[in-house]
Amino acid sequence: MREIKSDIITATVANMCIAANCHINSDIRDALSKSLETEESEVSRAVLDNLIKNAEIADKKEVPICQDTGMAVFFVEVGQEVTVIGDTLTGAINEGVRRGYTDGYLRKSVVGDPIRRVNTKDNTPAVIYYDFVKGDKIKITFAPKGFGSENKSAVKMLNPSDGIDGVVDFVIDTVDRAGANPCPPMVVGVGIGGTMDKAACLAKKALTRDITSSNADEYYASLEKELLEKINLLGIGPQGMGGTTTALGVNIEVFPTHIAGLPVAVNINCHATRHRVEVI
Image 1 (cartoon, rainbow, N blue to C red):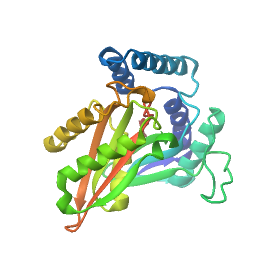
Image 2: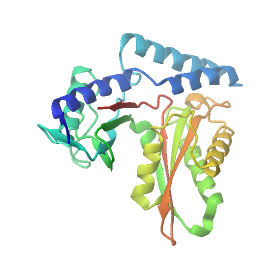
Image 3: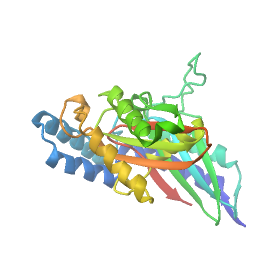
Image 4: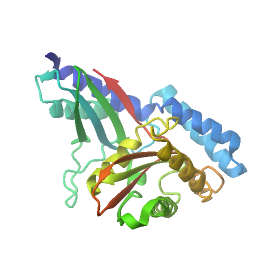
């Protein structure tokens, strides 16, 4: 059994919080640059150019890409041959968020109660999803989720008879309703199957996948391409200014479901689609 000190996890998470908020990933940066070349609208090309410059300034000066540094969301794969000593794994992650958001001068956006709304002042608690796997490592995926995009996400319980057409219509309608609010060009995560909550979790996890990758199943890989094409025909464009670049990517994740249901979730992300992965 491999032992990992909780302090190591805390330090790793703190660094991830700062890095994810200040440095966009290469797949997103490359997609923005490519969109600058293909975008048909002159106004929207200027918007894309400003988004790229903003990311470059954030990267160079290590300041947040956006003032909304998000609610801390984690997907954690825990090897069955690992034991955490010191604090609990959850405690270590939350302490990392606390330190990262404080030391990195990141905005604290979490309120301790959804109705009474008193700020926790350290951006905790984090939202953490665990998966237990073989091995002696811990893989941590961190995604700070801004709520300009989160607020435009949706879940719908379709009937099985709605089929693939119902799924496509719901995804396109959700993005169309979102309009400029999620700070497009957006990345769209789609979760299909499971239960209502599982579909939502799948959609969020899909946003942590590199947008240059495709679903391993050719059927869903083809659907990703179809949805991206249809979304970019909506004409919303960068920051809602019109044009041909409404989304940079569409990622789909699926899970078995009940014979009587077809849950579908759409989780929308802004153009930065911030996330970081570390393995301890």
